[in-house]
Length: 142
Image (cartoon, rainbow, N blue to C red):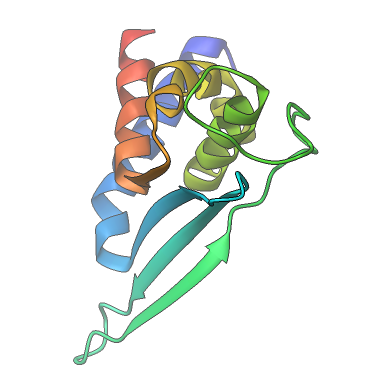
C-alpha cells in the first residue's frame, strides 16, 4: 500500500473513532509536577455501556506507559514545558495511547511535542479527542 493511501486510511479511521468513541469511551490525560520535581502522568477513562437502559459507567485511572520499546528518548520518565527528550517521550506515549497506531504516532509526535507539550505548565489536561483532532489536522495538511 502506498504512503498516500495509508495516510488517507489512517485519517478516515481517526474520523470514525471520533464519531464512535464518545458513545462508549472518553479519556482525559493529566500531568502534574510534584513539589519534589517528579512528574506524574495518568489517564482517566470513562466507559459507558450505551446498550443498557441504565447506561452503566465505569471509571478508572491508570498510569500512562512510557513506550520505551518504540523509542527510548527518556528512560527516566516524562517531562513537559520545553522541547527535550522527556517531552518527546510524553508526546509519543500520548499519541500511541490515543491512536493505537505506532507508525502514525511516530509520524506526528515531534510536532505534537513542539506545538502542545512544550507549552504545558506545572499541571495540564488534554482529552483523547483533542489529540485525535491534532493528528487529524496534520493528516489533512500533509
